[in-house]
Length: 417
Image (cartoon, rainbow, N blue to C red; front, side, top):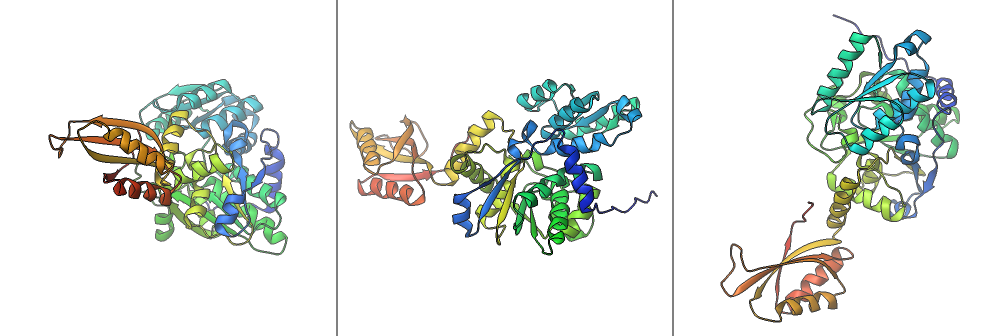
């Protein structure tokens, strides 16, 4: 039986060295104040915009820090990675900067924009397998056969230190920060941020709180923390595919266990609402995995105490998914509502319904008028309407206005096609 060496906790000096190192490829992303979130939670809230990072995510930090520590002989062998998204682009850009040949395995169904971006950074892209697990296995087999160095997305201390430079930047930009909220997938970002930020705060003679956030559909960390060891779970589909990891990394788990104060989970609805708020209020395009920290604050699952920074970990959002998420976010915020109304089959009823809705200051987006359906009387028609409203109160005002006009509206579940 192989005994694994204990995880050595990096020092503040280690993170400072890593920050100087990743500065060769990564920019210092801004922290933007959010009036909306500050008013909502009653504390000053800032957004650490790693969605504005080169490649659109923080991943380039860890990839570059790991690859820059390779020996000359290892660099000559080239590097291999497996990823469906942000890690692939981070590895490709880091390799280009360091002059290393890179091969990235991506699943056959990976987002076309992410595949093309990875190629454009100079990596050789191999699309293999229908799932990430198949893709990962193929990448590791090629690494074994060729001698190329496999670059893990989170389970290596050099990667963790690279990702942790986000935390160091936060403390440099806001020395008085009290709470940091950060997404967790495999754990590299959260582990690095927690250790770096807490070491920097300790150097100031104070403490800070770090809260990790996972999707409730892929929450491997709560299960692992309860068990006291790395535990694999069965994930279910989630829009936050960037953090859909079934098993924590050994290195980040040991650090998160000690340095992250709490791990919470958020729902798909929470994430969709957060993406919509970030678009409307902060003017930031953020992918689902990158929005979970804001989702946790908005839902109250993460409690802000003192000045709070939520990390927007990525912004590589597929346009088609963005369209669906916006629609879902509007629906869950009661701003996009589907009604069905049974009407007598005679002239003027459609006009009456439209007039009532207009009188309630709502906007009809889509109408389906049908005489065919279960439960319809011969003399009835069914009217299905998609209506824009300003929120829950306005939605119910529209319902009451229709009822007052003698109509029988029924709320329908949203369609997200």
